[in-house]
Image 1: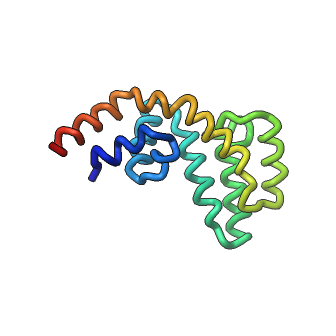
Image 2: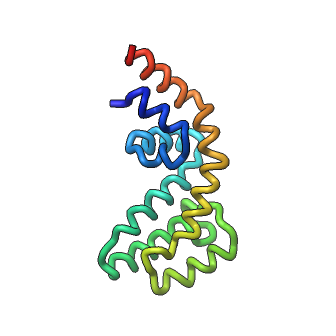
Length: 137
């Protein structure tokens, strides 16, 4: 259940929003409504990727992430520069826990500067905020 306190924390920083399971779900729903949820999807996939213990699984997952988000004309291509894309292409040949970090930082920055401020101004966020503030009275 959402609380007004939790939702007001989301407005303090993107980091606070992404540290909340509910925050991630609401932010994802907002981005889906704007047809721009590939960034949060990629960011979350990278967070999971870093937790993989097996090098075989890491290698397999790295190739899938590359194919889905990084390679040119990927199904869910993220907006990163050519240099970062090339670096990741090389990293995926011998993947490590940090091989997507540069792209993840770029995507985080894009969300922080663009999607996150739009989210805070969105009807979705304000309607939820209103409903939680009224139910808390």
